[in-house]
Image (cartoon, rainbow, N blue to C red):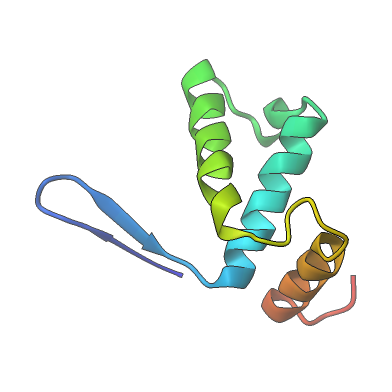
Length: 85
């Protein structure tokens, strides 16, 4: 994962597909369980940023809503952390 900041204040984050899948799943699961507060998001603005990020990742994950999504998440986790979980 890499991040850079341009002179205009724009930030660009480059992530692997596996990182995108894992991040999306973590936010979506927390949001679905209505417990994003467990990540200690102290203000509504923080919850909004997490939610907006999760929604921005949705179009990048074609497996969402299909039978392949669970396997995609499992494979993404294994690529990032190959230790058994």
